[in-house]
Amino acid sequence: MSLLTGVSAAYHSDGSRYYRASVTFNGKHISLGGYPTQEEGHQAYLEASSLLHGLPQTTDAFASCTALSFSKFITLLNYRNNGVYIKTPIYLFPSYFLYYLEPDLALKFDKDDLFFYSTHTIQQKGGYLFVCHYGSQYGILSRYGIRNYAVEGRDYVFMNGDNHDYRYQNIKVLNHFMGVCSESKAGRTIYTATIHINGNYMIGRYETEEDAAIAYNKAADILTKKGCKKQFIKNYISSLTADEYHKKYEEIPISDKLYTVINLSSPT
Image 1 (cartoon, rainbow, N blue to C red):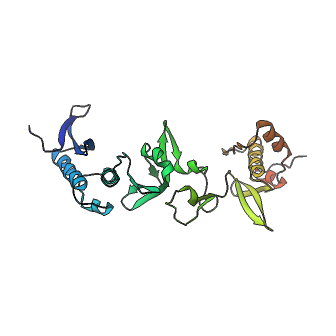
Image 2 (cartoon, rainbow, N blue to C red):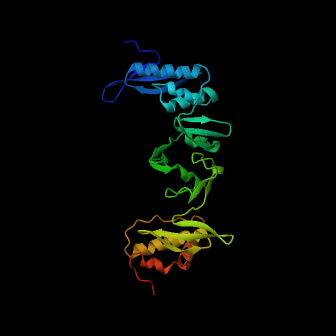
């Protein structure tokens, strides 16, 4: 049976047939994906050919596509306009690039991240943005030293107010550790450690972010030893050696009020 232009037959593992579409541009053979019918595959080929060989187009042109996926549309548009083929939906600009999640949703990144995101697909689940790397999920904020539990506006901010702009100069980390918040008092920064057990309980105020993080760990250890069943996320302070950490751990005070959280007695 003669197949339509740009289409080839393929078979699933169960023996059922489907159709693969492809197009060639500047000597490069580009797969457009698989389709249940050859008519749909051929339509994807026509749309891709129009995009690659027709007049210059923008992302608005995707509205007229019925078969070509949006991700592949961006890949082809970038290849046609910038001469670089990238499998993920990236469009290049001189000093940054856009990673398109949807036709009306694009994330902005520095060129330094191009290699990573050209080989990793960004996924989203309930507003959480992540990539899969060696079988594990990593939030894209982790590349900036921001933990998964961090809260925008409290632990980090987008300097220009655009929470789709992930360029490094646009993200400011306010708090690096679990249970730690900073505040300014009399012209200096104080770090407050709190822990959540049916409400927030203050552990204490400290001179450094690291001390507050250690105080949080200490409070979590005390509550766990006294029978609290909550699984606390511990802070890892990479700037301290093991000996330095343990010395501070022993010396750092925490509020006696903590012992009332789960009806504990204050230590003697």
